[in-house]
Amino acid sequence: MKKHVPTIQGRSFLFNTLFVLFNIAGVVLAVLGAQPFFQSSFFWLNFLGYTLIGISTAGLVIFQGKLMMANVLRALVGTVFIVSGIIKANDPVGFAYKLEEYFQDGALAYRIKEFFGDPSFSLEFLANHSLFLAALICIVEIVLGVFTLIGLSMKKVAWFIMALMLFFTFLTWHTASCDPSATFTDRNTYESTHPAFHSILASSKNPKSQVKVVEQSPTSVTVDEVKHVQCVTDCGCFGDAMKGAVGRSLTPWESFWKDLVLVYFALWMLFANRIVEPNARKANGLYLIATLLISATLSWVFDWYLLSVFSVLLVISALWILRSGGNALGNSMGVLVLTSLLSFSFISYVLLFDPVKDYRPFAEGSNIRWKMNDGKEGVYSSVFVLKNKRTGSEESYTEKEYMSQSAYWDEKKYQFIKRDQIELIPGRLPSISDQFNPSIRIQDISNDERSLSGFEEQLLMQTKSEAVRLKDRSTQKQVDVAVSKYSKKAYPDSLYEMVSRVNILDADKNEINLTEWLLDQPLVFVFSSLNIDEADWSEIDRIKDVVDYARETGIPVVLLTRGSRTQINRWKQKYKLSIATFSNDDKGLMMISRSNPNLMLFKNGVVRAKYTRLNLPNAETLKKKLKKQ
Image (cartoon, rainbow, N blue to C red; front, side, top):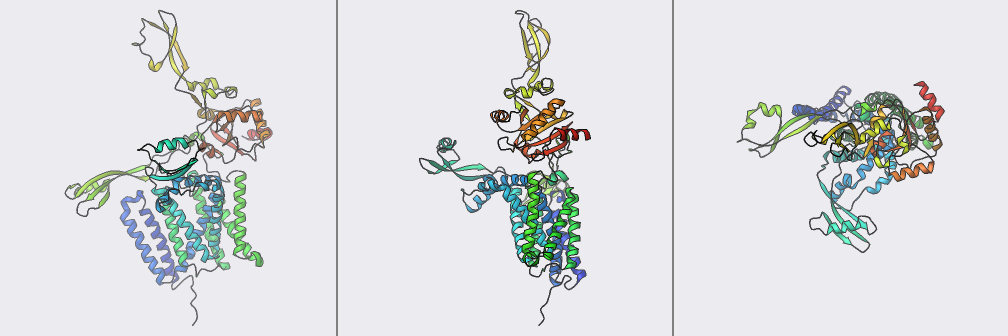
């Protein structure tokens, strides 16, 4: 008996095409029905969505259309994987920062502690390998996307995709369902040399303490500590690309639903993986067109059309190695090696310089003042939660439903539980908030800072407040009284004579903030370093050249970094460099650049140029740059 070979059309090309379209449309409707913004249409969107999914799934099974469904989803999932991998690979350091957040004991590990009852479980050791893991995940996503598009080794690839999507779905579920008020038990061992050793022991002796000793020896103590959960508010699924292009990231629940959809699509590919064959030449042409169209759409969303170019080039490169790789590389191994090398090369370039497409707020061309004020309020709706006394279940109704149905007010039928606010459209914080806060304590001000133009007139005024200078009529001595504390009752004219209004040092103001001064400058050079002790200062001579050029031309130049003033002064002495130095929040420095050090040119609050440690300019380069502007 002749073996049945599945075909793309199954029993009916027309019907299966319709079933595929209906199935995808059903998924879209079901996802929309789960979003708060569409809560008023919750029932109908879900009813239509799941009805379409059910009918079309049955139709695809009956008309043997699972190969068509799998092939359509291969184009979609494969391209999404490539684009997602490229976006992460464009900023692997930023992705690594996000992984470090998840590796904290109070972030992801506490779920494992709860599930398996193991308070000593920890993922913190992975933080030291976060950059390697970030690069590896990027490469894996891109490779799986390419293999999916060309139909190579689909029996294995489908399982890999499913495993990866289940992991991502767990991650987004964890992020979305995280309760910051929740607590967990964390088991830690402190050596006697640890700074907290004695305070931990002392705390454990308090009957009301949340620290319990599990094991103790002369050299160490193991304790269980009750700690608060650390919620990661943004899963970082598309890095900073969503924020930079669309204005906000996906919310955790939106990310969860996105991953659920991809899990559903992966199920179809898994269902059909045994009948998917590597693409024929004609099919390769169709998949290239599909890749181009889908990646172009995503490129439009992310405002980066090189995404489409990179995606198509990766698929073409894979097809080329299959045709010309011979017995050694003209196979899945050749595609794996070539795609991995291309992905690794891209990541290496980005690590040496900066993201090819900079989505961060301090990208070249960004108006920093605008970025500090581009936040938006969310849209909220009231929901009434009632207990149905007949069924005993709690039911939720929108304000419109509650106010229009007097039956819900009947206390014999319903018991009012609470009124909730549901976020329909998420609000967003400004692109730059308190992360950009260059400042210096009063006691740390040196001649380097005092040499800045406008230091006395603008910056130092931050530490002063308006006062009234009075002369005591009896002693003839003058006294300065803050305007906020001055009144005629406390200082009557019969006893005090007003001399003038003055500015005096305010004891409550112990630091100077540089933000407004920076944004007001017609031109200013801003160096930044996340950690001056760990930075690459091999191009220190170029930095000195820029500083000297700035002084000669009267252009202000500053350095933003973190660390103690002792570290900063030691660094200045080591490199014999005098430069006004201000402290800034870690997150702000990470946001400015992944390079350590980095140079920006600000013109009236706009980033006009940006240089990484490997392409720092000299004075001549800057002169040419400034002439063009």
